[in-house]
Length: 537
Image 1: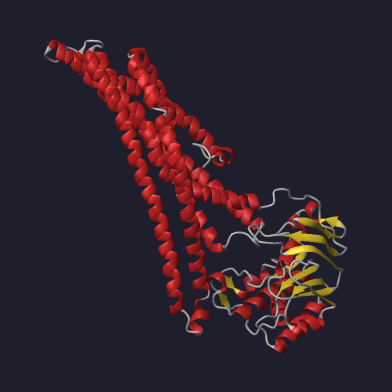
Image 2: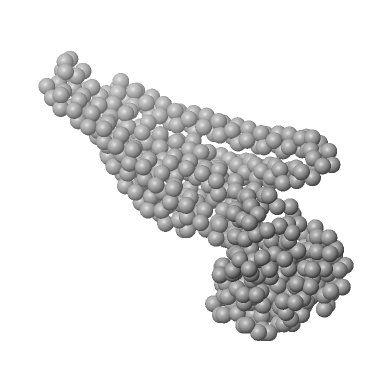
């Protein structure tokens, strides 16, 4: 966090700005109550010692002091209530923005495990930022100024000491904050890596179990867990040491004021009322600033999660076209280049390809050369770094993505399915399709199961091959209801030769243009044209 307030949270989240204004107002009211509290205490104590009995107005003093305490408690409750409302509003906005950004770039973005951890536990850590750090920051920005001003009019010497020692706390706090930020970001990255590792193991557990390698992965999980434990303990060490340093500095500063006032009181250079009034106020000037440093550690995890959320949001394309996609004409890659973030080199470089209407083009090559990336670019999930994609001669950057995708039927390597039955999943391709249309599409896709077969969460209940058949049936149904492009990523993987032949015939008979990534010889033989290329060509 480059400053006391996260700039992106201040700029993007309106609730943050509103809460900061409210926290300053609460801080000013709290500072006024602190001055009144110190005055009432000093007035009561000095009057009692001077008269050697309780002053005549002691009931009013006690009542006023109780009213001050109640008002401070009410302000504390109000500040907490405002902070939790602001935190809930900001978290809700960030979650919507992150999910919207992920929907715009579902390929090449954050993994599902990273995304789940971020929008649940990660952003929940912003509660510490809003409920502890920002309220204390509001007090630190107001209380020392008000208290220091009152002390200046009461005792100039104490005000000078306060002016010299008070800035030392933010200085040390900034130095400690840089160390804390680095340690927290490292801890967040290690936790993210552990979450991804565990999610990959769970997803591949059947394969690992089939090859008797499940137990062998235990050591890798233990190593990742140990790294996370070490990173967490490093953050805790920095937190405890910084709290000790700030506490010691604040205590020494108050002690210096107390010692000087004590000597001046002995030599009758200051009145008893002034000495007691300043001694009661002095700790209140240092306390908010010191507590900012302490609560900074409570906010560090939330700030790291916010940075990760903004990284996903910033990666999404901001400029979206508004023109309607042409309903005729070829799809053309014009000298396209693309590099994934943090990659060592480009996945695609100077890639040119044209797919004419009604043409079936197969993309072939070894894994990692950019075939699936080319499909993601064609769908508009990714934006090329160089070159241009053209649809009917119109740049895709100027086309409304929804109007283009309405013409496309897509089958991914791992198709997305919803809970329900097969018919409901196929009907996603054309909501107005009849039961006969769905049954026919399933038959063309080589499905040997009925439309009433139950599908659980994440496609559970269907094998990998069955999921592809459902997705292919959905794509074929979409073509029959107006789409004119088929974009398929390994559509026949997991199918035997007979079913593969039926699927190829079904794709050919649609008359739609098809861009297919495949390694299967039968699909390559059936294509009008096969494009093979090497990495970054």
